[in-house]
Amino acid sequence: MMMFSEMLEMVSRTFALSINYLPPVLREPVSLAYLLFRVSDGLEDHTEMMATRKAYLLEQWNQVIQGQMPAFEFVQNIADLDRNNPEIFVAQQAPDLIAALAASPEEVRDPIVARVSEATQGMARWQLKGPFVTTLADMDDYMHHVAGLVGYLMTDLFSWYSSQFRAHSEELLPLSHEIGLGLQTVNIIRGLRSDYQRGWVFVPQEMLSTAGINREQFFLPDFEDRALQVVNLLIDKAEQHLQYGITYISAFPWWNHRLRLACIWPLCFALKTLALSRDNVEVLRSEVKITRRDVKEIMRQTFLLGWSDRWLYGYVNNLVHSSHG
Image (cartoon, rainbow, N blue to C red):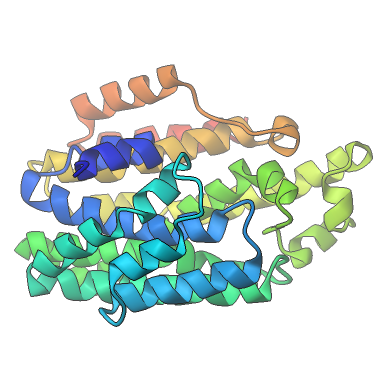
């Protein structure tokens, strides 16, 4: 059986950095939860399946999560999908994932089942509703199911691990949801072109209308100036969500450096991506990514000084202001 850490590396090297740095007791349930979410993501994002089949398989996967369908039967139903796709490979390991879920403590298993199930059902609904988004409220609804619920679950698991964190969980849950929406907005910005090529546009028409363009014009060279106005609005939206990250991270005491760093890194990687994306036409033409050097430098500085809330506040502000020139 492939180790969860190996699967994590396959589907997301960036998040694997954070998850693998968690305290050992927390690392396994967070790894499991992340992989379960990625099965849902892999079905939803598949480039070749029809939306109706995606919705059908997502509903089946939800039944597996809920214990209403054997995992091996689900695997048989996706046997025709290419296992060279990392997320499909993980999905085909469903029996191992579900066995690990069943063996988890009830305090861990119950929130994982609840959050992954709700997310999976929401993704199935959006497959039948898509491929376009009309309003900002619609965009937030979509992002709630693919990322906001991930934020909730991380708070559930952190609260299980830390009694000090648990005491503030009610006030931290909405912050984690905001962070999830922010990270997903960054994903949407990064994937604008690739999503368009597979037939999806997650930029709401409400936002496009402020620049006087429609979905088709958004990706045409003649309208790049207007399209960049919309990209910058998306960046503003992402930053507004991510501003809650510092408050959330500050809930962990300075000596709980591993937990802090596991939250700091995705936040800073996202903010650096936004800084590189503002006014950058390559966002529309291909994809903008931070470099390995950027990743290493963020990790180096935060490893040394990320225990300090005051330093972290200044560092994050510098990342945000760098995107505004």
